[in-house]
Image (cartoon, rainbow, N blue to C red; front, side):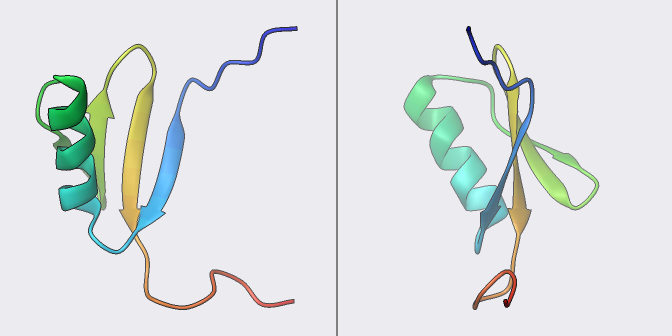
Length: 59
């Protein structure tokens, strides 16, 4: 069975910088702002969200 993500949100400390890096590395259009996110469009899409340092959740 084939699995396909149609949208992925990635946690990062520098959302714009990370999105720009991916776009440049893959030869894609520059990222665009969408609410609190930076989005890079390709066959599917990836969105970077700024997160604070430290664990994202605790047990």
